[in-house]
Image 1 (cartoon, rainbow, N blue to C red):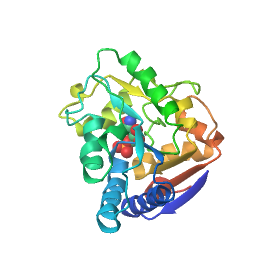
Image 2: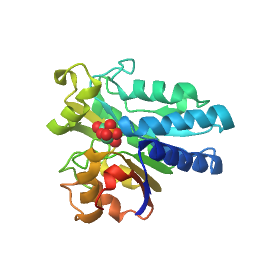
Image 3: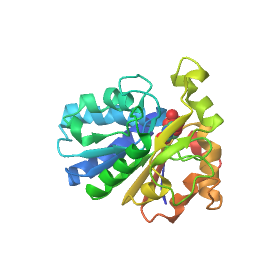
Image 4: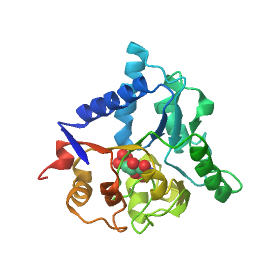
Length: 241
Ligand code: GLP
């Protein structure tokens, strides 16, 4: 794993955006895996800024997001579809039909998981997957204990994850209990992975990622087994490491 250490969240956002932009420019029809969450927001702002200034085109890019809450419609402002539309897609020339986020409000969520896996396969797999990391080491919504062999499926969210994400909702009770997430095996099949981490709250997760064992108790640890992972993290997340 290659580690790029940057000063702060602003520098991280800029660096991660440049990283993605270069990849898109080199392969304009790339399959890009995307993440939601506070960490990725700044990166997306810089992608939009670059699009407006330098006209990097996303017309031929296909995207697959990692996860979505079960029960939330894409128009619900806490859904990850809504997050992606408002924080990124609506501001680029990307074709909406080429943006994929699991649908959390379908009648048959199990079928949705299988369809999502198939779609990724049909498109030839993900070229570059952007990842955040949960305080407990989750990637996507693969919570501690998730099998390294897991594929896109329905999962129950850990209490700590619901509490962490409650800041986006009116109250904790509104945070869904379940989600659809790409599996760990699905994520590991990406040709390349870019993980971003910022702030003191991610320090312990970074410590375990960099110094701990590979174990299903800490899902992100599997990334050590991937041949092409880059981590961009700020000083606060890397203090003492
Ligand atoms: C969320 C998402 C993840 C995200 C992570 C970190 O629950 N499911 O995909 O990477 O947790 O989120 P944040 O960047 O807000 O800390």
